[in-house]
Length: 311
Length: 269
Ligand SMILES: Cc1cc2nc3c(=O)[nH]c(=O)nc-3n(C[C@H](O)[C@H](O)[C@H](O)COP(=O)(O)OP(=O)(O)OC[C@H]3O[C@@H](n4cnc5c(N)ncnc54)[C@H](O)[C@@H]3O)c2cc1C
Ligand SMILES: Cc1cc2nc3c(=O)[nH]c(=O)nc-3n(C[C@H](O)[C@H](O)[C@H](O)COP(=O)(O)O)c2cc1C
Ligand code: FES
Image 1 (tube, rainbow over the protein chains, first blue to last red):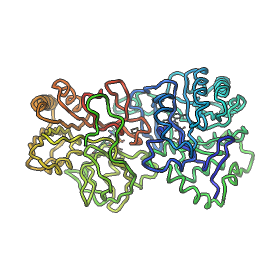
Image 2 (cartoon, chains in turn red, brown):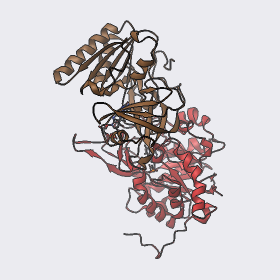
Image 3 (cartoon, chains in turn green, brown):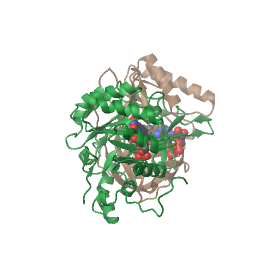
């Protein structure tokens, strides 16, 4: 059984990465499984300076999903490199840093800091966070702004592969995907959370202090699958699919619509050993679908018509 | 036993008993006074814990909905069982209260930091379900006569395992029905904290308004008080940053990792 994937400059022993913000800095999960078994570890979004995040309540459960408005609380890039990275098994498992900044030059500075950091395998640029006032999704909703971030990060990140994480909160995801590909992105990951809210009719209050949050979990999988399919049909660079993955079959569904690799997010909250079990189950799921390598399945969706995108 | 740095900020360097995930069978349930208060008995896990630490429970039958596991104090653990004391307040607790014997629950624990229990006299302040983490502590304490407990409750006493703790303890319960009862209870809390402050350690667990009163008097009397907070949790292991509380240094720390028990003078409620 061949689980390995080559993302062009980033080779993984299996296609399953953790999704940013749902796996802490990785170390939180080391009691529950061997971090070396992951395809890659993607850590919480990091900014130049530590960030305190939003007021509580920051999370709310919804049917088969959840809303979050964490507001990118993080310890800052320098503290991560000093206090967390040395304890991660970066020699055996690629560590990917997810980045957040408020301006184009700041993305460049972050990329520069990481450009010659041996423990970092790739950069994932988050232009899609819905939970912060500045930066975040404002770059992800406009093709020009997205391209500007990518060019700047690409200029500063040296040889590190650059993943751009897209927001689903747009009218045409394909145009954004093409723009970031054109600006030099090495890979695309999608989707980030969908904008949403929840209210309590008895207290007449929003369930999140921030009022709005990002929806994630199994509830969003159909949306994610469609967007990943659309983007895969449009771009030539490898695509990392995510959104609601909660089983080995789900992983294969994203591969079937064209993704090279996947990330597991909210499902990590079901049980902290979840991702390790999912990876262990992947070979069985592959044999059930009759494949011996992911290559055999990738992009193999059989549609009757060249699929119409509107519905 | 001491997992806190003396003085200084919230201790972020040490973690006690390493948590693990296990699938545990439900041995049985026992209702207390109504279907809304249930003692859930599970096969005992292999790990040890300190009182105040908690578990995340997720019955296997939940599939993908409810999504999150639910956090509960470990009420008591013996060679035969682990006991969780649950009040039904929503969908998850309702489903847990209806678990069939023989069904399997995914249990992650022991999580967080429990109470530091020094050898000297103890004053336990419990409000409602806040009694849960103290039952095992009291039953296993070598000198129960050194423990005083003040228990405030809004529903009838029959729902809570108050009588079950050792008779040698100095126990007092107060029922709050009216606003006036709540005021009187707050007053008594203040008096007990003031009188006990020079003698020993105070441990408190209960709803937020109760903890606020306890904290107010703790700070006023410079008493050594540990409080256990309840926050909304998704992951339980420090990863999602949903459960944070604010420290005096304006830092947001995960209560699932650095709590749920904190020194009363270290966090902002
Ligand atoms: C460390 C810790 C220890 C706890 N120990 C116990 C215990 O020993 N016994 C017990 O009965 N309960 C305990 N709780 C509270 C228990 O976790 C919640 O009552 C439960 O998660 C509610 O789930 P639900 O699906 O029934 O309610 P939901 O439908 O999710 O919500 C119903 C109500 O409960 C509140 N709520 C939801 N989740 C939490 C939460 N994690 N903490 C506090 N309130 C919440 C909601 O705001 C809402 O008002 C503890 C909580 C924590 C954080
Ligand atoms: C609590 C939480 C925090 C998150 N933080 C980040 C983050 O810091 N950076 C980022 O790019 N995405 C973040 N995300 C989005 C996830 O990485 C992922 O894109 C999204 O949740 C969809 O995948 P899922 O349904 O598998 O969770 C966060 C999601 C959650 C639930
Ligand atoms: S519950 Fe996720 S960080 Fe505490």
